[in-house]
Amino acid sequence: MGRLVLVQPLGMNWEPNRKDMSRIANIMPPIGLCSLAAWVERFGHRAEILDFYAYPEEEAGFLDRLRADKPDFVGFSVTTSSFLDAARLARRVKQETGLRTVFGGVHVSALAPRLMREYPEIDLAVAGEGEQALREILDRDGRPPFGVGGIHYRVDGEVVSSGPGAKLPDLDQLPFPDYGKLRGFPDRYKLPLFSYPHAPGTIAVTSRGCVFQCTYCDRSVFGRSYRYHGAEYLIEWFGLLRRRYGIRHLNLYDDNMTVNRERVLGFCEALTRSGLGLSFNCASRPELLDLELLRALKRAGCWTISLGIESGDWDILRRHRSHAVDLGTMRERIGLIRKAGLRVKGLFMIGLPGETAASMARTRDYILSLPLDEFNLTKFTPFPGASCYDGLTREGTLDENWELANCVNALFVPNGLTAAKIDLMFKEIYRRYYQRPRVLARYVPMLWKSPDSWRRFVKDLGSFLQVRRDYR
Image (cartoon, rainbow, N blue to C red; front, side, top):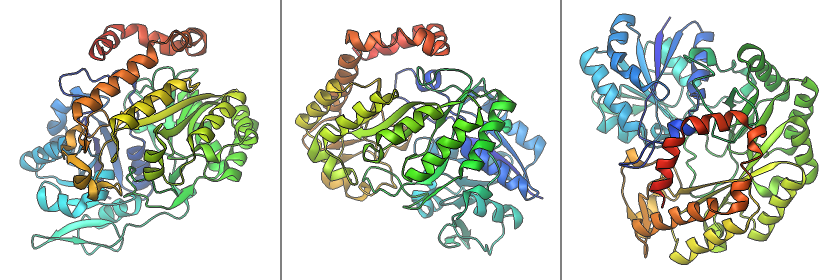
């Protein structure tokens, strides 16, 4: 039996010299670690989760805890922005306890051989989906040869791979994620403000992968595969969350919930019949939506649909978005979502390769013209696993500062632009969007539609006012 401590590092998730609002507005549970913990325990191993994003103060006692518990491995799940923080922790683990380390996550999946060469504090790296590889590591006490793909290790100082990562063909064979491994769940974890009608809430992932090939998305973990949980599995999982933790709202954190129309209709019918009384949010592409599907989602409890609109410039969309629909169709689908009685959130980014001052202005004008209930704007972030990454130095200037790869820093600047111009447009769009009286008026009904959000907003009003001053 192997013993494993899984760590989510704090990382950096904001802009230098500005308050990190992400931890006030949204603390997501590390559901991937919850799933991995449940999986390895099914096979007789033991797993514990330490979430330094939710509890950064616990890092001070981290090494003492490891010395007392003496696990066989310390595992780190990392994004691009959290990798260097995890490497710092792993270095201390190696130096002061001698315990073995395992790294996984999207950043590792994109760069495993390079990271193994440059960071000796990583003993083993898992590229791709982690379940079968992590079980193999624990079963074999970390000793090669490994019979499962996706594991990177060293032999006589050289980095060796056990082959392509293994994918689970049937997701319903997975145990439910063990949220109980998270201290303070669900109260410590917060969904984004005004994104839910009732608390407590949490996240769930009902599928893996995406069939589309947008240039800015990192597909290094799942590739182009698309697999999903069946309706029966989901109803049992969500029922457990409702009964055990009192969960009332779910953010379904799939890349794209509505790829398989019949699957979504079956899920909606099953959730409607279940009587669980849950509400949920999900994401979709506009071309996958129709009124029948939207009404089924509404009956099942859907509250908000997020659309990855990305840009208001057709040339930018056509270049970067796989199977892009035109801006008129996008607008029509937004109207359809609202007709079905659902809220709609638009997701946008600026600073993509080929972006110009004129194209950013067109995105600004398009955002301001749409009848959105919510919107989110990011700066294009160059993730190593994205298909556009290798050609970025021909398209502009690239700053490979992983700690700031968090969608609010302009690490890539297209030719003809500057980081300052991107930042000015970023602030202008937010300022003009939220200064409109009709947008502010939409938050008045949230007093009774999302009362918990208003309580949280008032509690942290000082921090939000500071952000407002930063964006003037």
